[in-house]
Image 1 (cartoon, protein in one colour):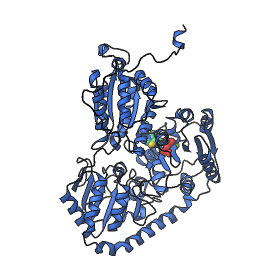
Image 2 (image 1 turned 135 degrees about the vertical axis):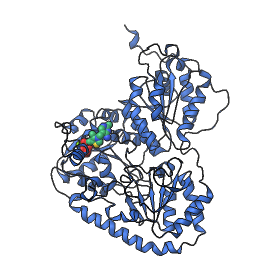
Image 3 (image 1 turned 60 degrees about the vertical axis):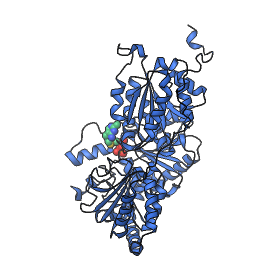
Image 4 (image 1 turned 45 degrees about the vertical axis):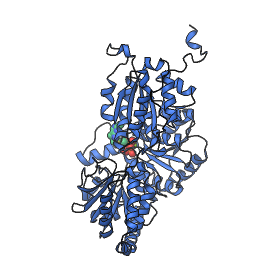
Amino acid sequence: MTKPLRTPGLNKHDTIGHTVARTLKKHGITQFFGQSLPSMFVLAAEELGLKQIAYRTENAGGCMADAAARVSGKPSVITAQNGPAAALLVAPLAEALKASIPIIALVQDVARDQTDKNAFQDLDHMGLFKPVTKWVRRVDVASRVEDYVEQAIIAACSGRPGPVALMLPADLLNEPAMPSSMPRPSSLGFFPLDRPTPDVQALEQAVDLLVSAKAPVIIAGGGVHISGAAEALSLFADALSIPVGTTNMGKGAVDETSELSLGVIANCMGPNGSGRHLKDFVTEADVVFLIGNRTNQNGTDSWTLYPRNAQYIHLDIDGQEVGRNYDALRLVGDAKRGLEVMLKIAMHKQISARSAQRAAIVGRIVSGKKKHLEESASVRLSAETPIRPERIMQELNALLAPQDTVVADASYSTLWVTNYLTARKAGQRFITPRGLAGLGWGMPMAMGVRAVQEAGHVFCLVGDGGFGHVWSEMETCRRMGIKVIVLLINNGILGYQKHAENVKFGAHTSAVHFASVDHAAIARACGIHGQRVTLPDEIAPALKNAMTAESATLIEVMCTENAFPPITFYTPEAN
Ligand SMILES: Cc1ncc(C[n+]2csc(CCOP(=O)(O)OP(=O)(O)O)c2C)c(N)n1
Ligand SMILES: [Mg+2]
């Protein structure tokens, strides 16, 4: 039995697996998230110099791929085996579909002559991926493989970006390499692949509406980041003195220290909410300009926040999102391109009425932000033990630099991040999995950011419930040399679950309490730094140590279970 132990060298050369890898390389893809399968592709890819970032679970790998695409402007590639591995990709692809993130899933399928014979781990992969992708195909013919990989990239990156899945039968990958019959020299591995300009007459009309509005407001969603439109947005808003709020996913679309920024205006209008005293800018607006904003439940505070009688202007790449929930002047096209053209149009308009309002708007924003800081001072500066999450945010905010990225897990972590941290430049990223808000996605998303972005620190805030889904990826951090700084809120409970049940039903189920876990010890056992923090004054030194450390760190903060983000529906006035 010596044969399985011998590795004399790759015995298959220039296969269809190589064709796939070569095609990806041509499109500027230099790495992929995988775990060995489909083996012929991965062996070929590594032979051709592509880097495999080897995840522990497909679920986490999908989240890494998602966040890597979010920050790099390039589609991510993830590979997986057929059957159970493929099934574990469904949730992260669903997040990417909702959040419009291009991921190319290359999934092994059973050998072509074994289809529908109950082959091992055979499954209806087309049916599995259909509802969670923009495009799903299986390629069966060697001469079409390059075409299909190209089509997968184009499908993912064009129009409204999103995930795609391509099934690659295991036996096909072993066949001799075969290029496409037509030359395909273009390199298309970036998004947005195209930047269509919205109808110019409609853009003109939109500028007229904004110039003559009494109280206009802009609400930027995650689409602004996807389009790379942050700079264009700031210039436009500044030229017309229009205040800008963002959704949770749009956080960082504008510099939150700039004088027209309202910060996040969404489902967090309760006490201590950062936008609580700026809400009127939205509720009393006469013209609302939505950009890259799919008007979802969280962003609109269950469709209660945006005014009923305002005139809406809606700029989005997806015509189906425009007017979905608010009848609007339709600007269908790329956000960056649209804003650039609108700025040019505005330069020829009489904008003195807008400029005349600026000082008053800025004054109201300064006073609204001041009220928030005063109102939240006791929780932000709290010396309580167990520690308050707001204090963690206060310490992190003090150390945060414009080039840093912050990632949050679902649940409360997202709202702590969106309410208590300040974006220091237009385009700073705060990655929150708000497409579907799956627990556990925060840490692997932070890892995905780190895998593609050299600048700045990557901080990540997670709850103990969510983190329980992905402990094993700490070993991936160690093995792959991925340095992330994870702040874990150990409150011993499924916080949002428990508290929301109490608010809605007056009781909670028996699932919401955990036995005590020493997460810092698990981190150390995986070979990364692990530190437990029990006193508020220990947070800043722990963060500073983590920032200078060479490898990843888990800072486990022992927190109170009696801390509630400013979720509107928890507040008396909302009920
Ligand atoms: C995969 C998944 N399962 C379940 C949920 C429902 N859910 C939302 S928040 C939450 C509690 C999260 O607890 P934890 O991660 O400890 O964060 P905390 O609220 O305590 O800060 C649950 C179970 C979800 N969003 N995703
Ligand atoms: Mg918890």
